[in-house]
Length: 536
Image 1 (cartoon, rainbow, N blue to C red):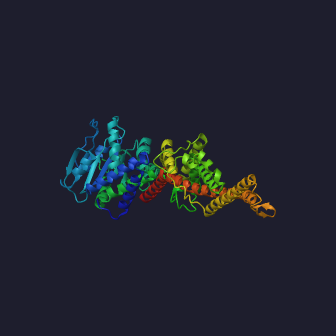
Image 2: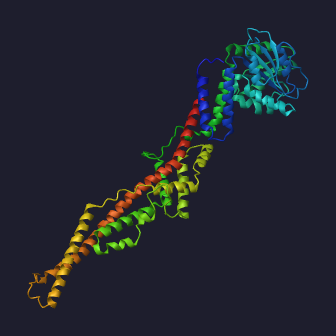
C-alpha cells in the first residue's frame, strides 16, 4: 500500500501511542476499536495495493444486478435468498498472483470470481455484500464487519427506500468522517421519468449534505439497463488508478477512532501537566501534597515521636545540669524514645495505631490530592486515578511505621554548655562537701574542747565552712533552675528537627505509595491526549 506522504504513518504512530498508553488504564470500548483500526492497518499494509470496493444496500435495491453488470457476468444471482452463512461474493480484476487471494482470505470472502485484467480496473476487488436489512442476523453482522474493512464503500439505494432512516442513521451518517471513501448510488433510475429522477436525486443530495456527506459523490445508475454504469466504472477506475483508496480509508478510520478517543480528553485538560513531590516549587499541587503529608504524619504518630524526642532531650539535659546526687532518679523511668522502639525499620514500633480522627483526615487528604491531580481530566481517567489512589490501609500503615521507625532523628550531641554546667555542678557539690566536712570537723573539735585551738575563718562575719556548704548547695540549685529553660529550648529545637526528618520520611512514603502513581496516571493522560490530538 503506497502512501504519497507520511501523514498516515504519523497518525497511525500517534494512534498506536495512544492505545499503548491507554492499555491497562482505560476500560473503554473506544480503545478496543482503535486497536482494531491498528490491526487493520497492519494487515492492509502487508496485503498489497489492491483496492477493495464493496456494494452495500437493502433488499430490493438492485445491488446484485449492479454487481453483475460491473462484473460482466452473473456472479451473484438476483432475487435468490442469500446462503445461510451470509457470505459476500467477490470479483477480482488482476493476475492470479497479485496478492488478492491473500487479501480475500483476510476479509474472509470465500466466493470469488476472477476477471481478465483491464488496464483501467487492474487491482480492483469488488464485493457484493449481503443485504443490511436481511432477516438473518448473521447476514447483518457480516455487513457490519465488512463495512469496517473495505477501502471504498458504494451504498446502493433505490427510489422507493432512498430516505430510509435505518440506512441513514445506522450507516451513512456515521460515515461522515469517511466521505472521501464513500460513494452513494441511486439505482433503478430507469423506473423514474426524467423529472422524478431529478427530484429524487435533489432530495437525496439534500439528505446527504445534512448528514455531513456533502463531499460524497452521488451517481444515478441502472444496473438493468446500464444507464450511468460508465460513470460508476469511471469513478471506480479513478480510485483504482490513484492507489490511494486503502490509505484514504485508513486515514479516515484513524481520524474517526481518534475522534472517539478524544471524548476522554476534554479541552480543559489539553497541555496541562502537574508536578508532584520534591522540587515542586510554586506548583499549585504543592498545597494538597503538603496537606497529605501532614495527614499521614499524624496517622503515623509523628507528633508522638516528636513529643518523645523532646521529653528524652529534656530528661537527659536536666540530668546533666541538675544536682548530681539526684541524677540517678532518672533511671527509674525508661527513656521515652527507647520506649517506642525506634531506630529499626525492619521491626514494628510501639507507636499507637491511628485513631478514627486521623484516618478520616488521611482519607480527606488523599481525596483532595487526587482531585488536584485529576483536575480537568475526563471521567475515565479520573476513575483510573481513583483506582490508583486506593492503597490498602494496612499496607500504608506498615509503610509509614517502617519509615518512622527507621528515620534518623538527628544527632544527639551533648552541647558544650551542658558539659560545662555538669562540671560546674560537680565543683559546687565538692565545695558544699568541703564545707560540710569542715563543719563536722569543727563539731568534733568542740566535742573534744579543742575548738579554740584551730582558728575559724570568717567572711563578712559568716564562718567559711558554712559559707562553702550553703553557697555550694544554693549555687548548684540556682544553676539547675537557670539551666531548665535552656534545656527546654534545646528540647524543642531538637523536636522540631526530628519532626522535619520524620515528615521527610513520611513524604517519601506519600510519594511512593500515592503521589507518584497518581502523577504517573496524570502524565499518561497528558501523553494520551497529546497522541490523540496528533492522530486527529
